[in-house]
Structure formats: structure tokens, C-alpha cells
Image (tube, rainbow, N blue to C red; front, side):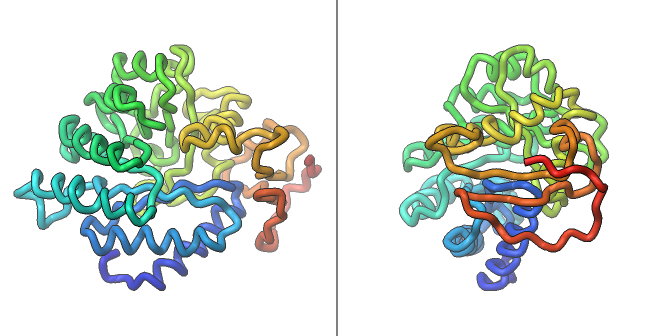
Length: 310
């Protein structure tokens, strides 16, 4: 990431956004976090800004400079936390390069105290808050997300009973990423039914990234939500529409078909709406509209011979 020029990152981002759009993602949260130095983090966010200016899908940029402690700071972690709080976060906010700040809160990455310090600085500079929380073990990430009023707590495969209770009594959305755990070969998934039955709001996302979830297919993630997380089909649909919008602070603008909301619509080649979260691997998307305008999609090469329902 540090070696790639910004123009190349911009071209790569544009092509990947088009691919995500063709698989049904009309609003895409895109995060930095793979440069881990000021120049590269800002380069990633500026590439996103360039693509967002002309992309048909809506790009929501999030600053994830606290994705990992970079090698040059391994022996002086506190210095990197200060760099984030005193330098990078103020710059990102001043230049309006992101709308939220995320931290990977997990043992071996950033602990609860470090995460609190980083997100408190982000909130002070007007950024929304998000957490990579309790991906592998329950270490207080979900509880911290609720304490700070974060928009979302993501991953949660290792969330504790206390974390479930905290999320259930909050407006923080639990974003579950089933494709990630499958790709990593991890047998444990987030406890979706426990979260739902406790009263938490659930969203699903692709977590499209090079290390743990190389998929652009939102329908595939819906199918995994049903088959692996035990969601009902209606719950999976809510998880990629209105609840997903809420995880970005956008539930009042999109995620529902209603007067006054952004007209983001996806048509799929199915005879029953539940088939969207049934077929595994086939791209069922036949048409996409964002903001009421039709998006050009690549020519489809395979058909399941199903009836098209609007």
C-alpha cells in the first residue's frame, strides 16, 4: 500500500466499487488502515474521495488508522496512539476525508484503554465512532462501543454475555461478517440469534478486504447469514437494508422504500424474494438503481432461468 501511487489506488478503487455495485451494494463503507503511516493513510482516503466524487454508489469513508500497530512502532505503542490522536485524526477531520473513525479493539491489537483514547479524540474532532470488536474473544469491545455511543460494533464472533446485554440495550448496531469467519477457517460465528433475541439490531456486510474476506457478493453474505448464523430470510433482508444504513448513521436517508428516502433499488433474478438469500455463489442481480438512476452493469454470462421480479 505504501508503494502504490495514489492514481493507481484510485483506479483500483473505482473498479472494485463497480464490482460491488454489480453485486447489489449501493452504499459502501470504505476504510483506510493498510498504510499505517500518515502519508499512506491520507493517500488512501484521498483516493476514496476522488472515486466518491463520480461513483454511482455512495461511498462512506472511515478512518481506520488504528487497524494495527505498524512495525516501526511495535516497541513504542504509546507513540503511535499519540500520533493518531494528535496528528492523523485532526488532519482527517479538518480535510473532511472521513465521516467516522474505527479501531481494531482486540487483545494483541489495541486494548480497551488505547481504543477509548483514540475514539475519544475522534469524537472530539466530530467523527462518528465504530469498533472492530470482540472478533476472536470477548475483551470488552462491545461494551466500550455502547459506552461511547458508537454507530456500530463489527465482527463480534467472540462477544461476551455482557457484550450481548450491552448491545441489546443500545442504539449501536451489531454488524456481523460471516464470510470472514468462513474464509479464515474459524468454526465459530457471531451469536446472531442470541443478539436478536436479546433485542440488538443486526446488520450484515461483506467485509470485502484482502486478508480475510475477498468477496464482493452481498447476496452470498445474506445466504451465509441464513445458513450459518441462523437468521430468518426477513432478518437477513433487514440486515442489509435499514439496519445496514443505521450502522452508518444513514437510516433516515436510505435502506427503505419510502417517500423522501434515497431511491437505491436492486432487482434480482428470482421467483421468490427468499431466494436472494438461498442461492450460493450465483450473482442474481439484474438491475441496480442508485438515487433513482439506473446503473450500467456488466453483461451477465450465466442465467438460472428464473423469473425476474421487480
